[in-house]
Image (cartoon, rainbow, N blue to C red):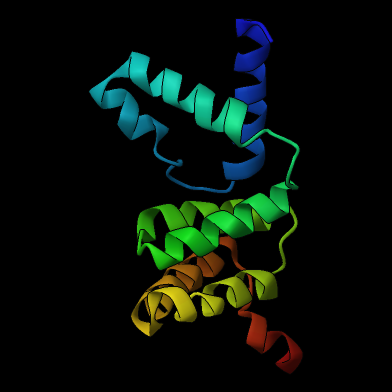
Length: 135
């Protein structure tokens, strides 16, 4: 793939995953420190790694939510919860993946990730998964 194709693939994947994030997914911050490195990182992560077709985008994002929950990375888990919902994960899928991390990271990281998830749902104007049946 040539540079132009990679750039287009990067933009397309970034839009698909992160278009609902009010403040972006990190790139703008990276750019303030080192624009060239930010571009290279973005093209690798978004244009190469996140655009691979071995896993579906939904599977890839649920893996990201799980790992970021267990690692206790609230800023990143927020971005990837948005991305998971943007590529077809249900609200219940995301909640289940977060709860599953109690086994690997403990309940404190689960609670923190659920708090992040609650904020994401509020940003998106979406109900909590457990409250859908009550409506």
